[in-house]
Image (cartoon, rainbow, N blue to C red):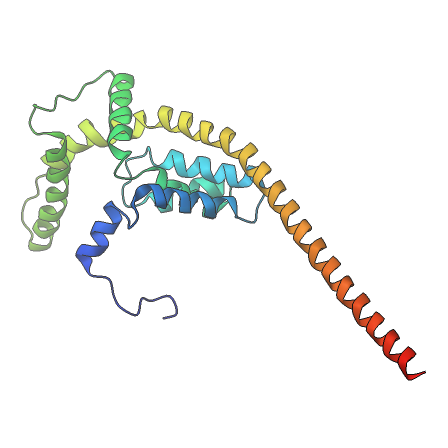
Length: 226
């Protein structure tokens, strides 16, 4: 395949770079920012895509953020590539505060609370949900009884409050990102157009100088012959 790596990356290395890219998250952030600024679209469409990507990071659909961001970006008529790249707002450095804000807001809106010492810890509920899915798939295949206790607890204590609570901080952060992005993108595109125009004018002037010099040399050669 055209885009397939010649030397496949080891699994552990790929996992490590997913958690901490080479050069650090600061370099990754600047790379994404540079790519977003150079997208060939209007500032408003790119900013709508950024809104979709930032909002998506406040949803509990881990592993599906690209899909969710693309769907929201398409519904908003935003730039899809900007939506996908903006999901990098969610990374190992920001997922903890995002998760805490979403869960606390969700439990507050629902009038519930999650006691980390009740039944299982936060991480334990994630593990129990994944274990339930796997064990019950095997149980169904073998015709045995299923037990969805861990998944049910995860849904009511984590997933649903996270889904509800992520809406408010997601909308707030997405809207801030939109209104910050539009003027910055507009200024960057205007400056870039000016730089391209100045470069074109410089090339045009240089070509005119060469043409004039060539015409002058021909004229001198003709005069010498005469």
